[in-house]
Length: 593
Image (cartoon, rainbow, N blue to C red; front, side, top):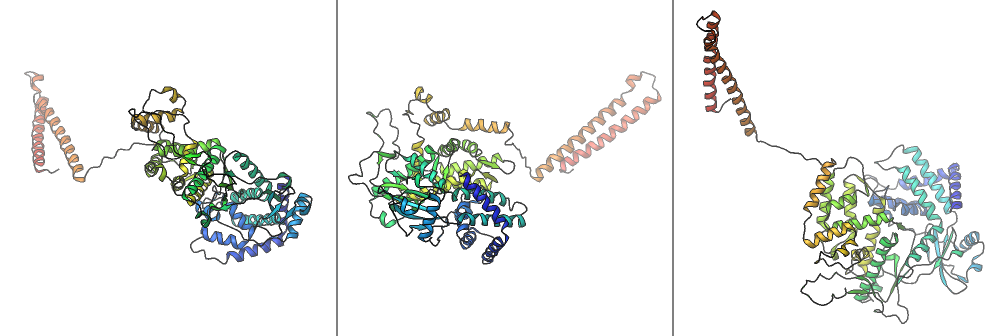
């Protein structure tokens, strides 16, 4: 891998120095760009058409770009994921030269037989059917000569354009960072040993899982430009004519098998097929001697209700969906997703919180995968989570579309000005594709049942007997608490109160009181206050004047000239006070100021 990266970087530098070739390619690109009308902007459809016209390298770049949810809006990722390239095949002489160049021997010495006509031809490589000397039939993918140089040249051109015309992010999109990330992904796509690693990891993960198959890599016939894997034989799920030959029960079993295996990939393995559309899942015929009812189940049907204490006898075992007579085989491992244990737990928490109608828990979980672009409006976010719980929490499990829930969360976070962890966007796309494949097989199977089965608490807990302390101790504390609340019929009011108080304490929400008065009510209050103030002033003047009038009692029998003046002032004050008091009473009666 390191040698391949070194070679690719050298090609990049050489391409940057080769101005004539780069400029010629630039003219070709400009001619393509002039073909389209951009009155409505560069829409996802126009983007797909442009990349298709630019040729196989840009088609592959578009396919890789569809996985870069951290840099591109989701509608563009979805459109680019549909890109398919149809490229003229290499002649057999070129194929033989490539095999001999990278494996050290010609085709005739490495394979017992090798079909000259390819099974398929794409922008990076083409695939041939071959046979090993022990009789094993294999598929051989051979990388096109010069594709590394072409990709290096095109990236040099893109870099030149960005350096000249793009000086800062465009509408928040860091184009240079996006291209850098795209180039790293291209390095992985061009080195076929990475796909070989995916084959090995996926094959090892599914070893021992009945009725689930995938190609196996032959390492001694694999290198960075040649990949040899076991030949897959089966019919695509997308073949509706073939599906019509299967009975409804067999189709239901196949759908349950796909759902169960995809849930295992995500929740158990943490390594999942990121493009599980109906063309990437094959159905293989039963082997001789196999019976449709031969195996045990892959997932439970709907849960049986808890029986009351009056019911006697043992509980019947849950009805199982038997394994199908046919097998499924996964193909095309160019797009794979990986999940850490933390990311898997986040997915489980999202589904659990929605099913339990726990908006507070959903809010906490969502904030672990969303980065705000500004200040968080916790109140608005809580409302958003409550709406999602209301939208999905009341559904029966059979009607619950996990992909719709993921899309709703993504749309709400984007509208709320959040950056979302790319793992969730890629996972949502994969789940939606898997749900489409499952529905094609049978509308009676829901992938959520398989997910819930994978996170089953693993013990039999009698919810009618809350003294079962030993069982409760085995559970996660949060799950145990929710089960106890559910069994007792306890509402979440106290929990909501605690959450709200916690948010208040942390300053995440604020309490605002708003007193609204009509104009005439406010005028009345103002007028009464004015009356009260004037009355207090009148009373104060009246009391003061009365004191001045009685000042003789302090002076004794010798009345001085000053006393006469005080009495005169006091008398005038009484007269004035009575005048204003009479006027105030008259205004109050008339209701005027």
